[in-house]
Image (cartoon, rainbow, N blue to C red; front, side):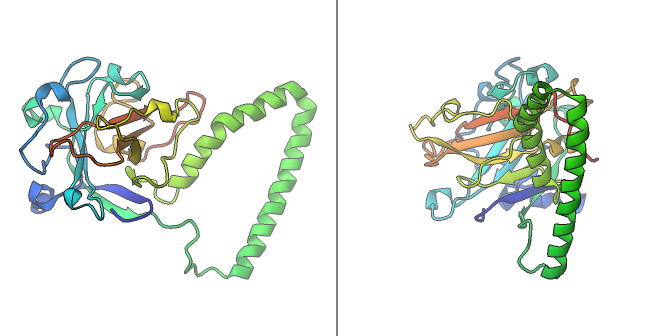
Length: 295
């Protein structure tokens, strides 16, 4: 993976392109069956059972993520498995219905498997590209005019609202906006340019973007790897992926605001075996406006 934030997008693959999703091509993909890097050290069936209902988890996705400068991680893939039971998603936080990494643990019928897509990776473009064709003078004038209109509208709204609401109510509204609305707005603004993104990848660099001010983990909430090294943020799975999984309505099926994956900072390898890492699940705040998921 390259430096900076990289975005992943789900792309349908026809019969003629199925070869791209085989193990020999080191694919990044959603659904179907995992394309293992190798058969040695595969996790047993117990490792892939849901931590809550103990039913087998389905393969959700895999991400090809070699580490530059690490010969031992020249080929490296992260696998995510998820329970299909809706009740297991009612609690936010760690563990439970989600884990990293055996094929033999999955029931052999298509209804259990998620639809299969290729994940295409692209760098996230800066908000204001350096080669923008917009005339700087015209842009500045437009921005200044927009700011002036915005300030006038804010003054008008504030004046009207102040007459209708007492000071205590206004203060409570301001605090509420600070905790929830602003964080959710940052999330929406950040993904606005590429609303179809299903993955955000940036190992050890820029952290995740949160969908809510609630249930954001502290450092102590992220357990160290079994080797003793700290775990670092590597990538997050976005809510837009739910559109591609053909799941039922929210509240009656699997659901999340974002799934944040943390991996061993040293990539210890655990004797060249598949190693379980750590996922944090965050839900949308009940007070925030639900993010529209396009089909």
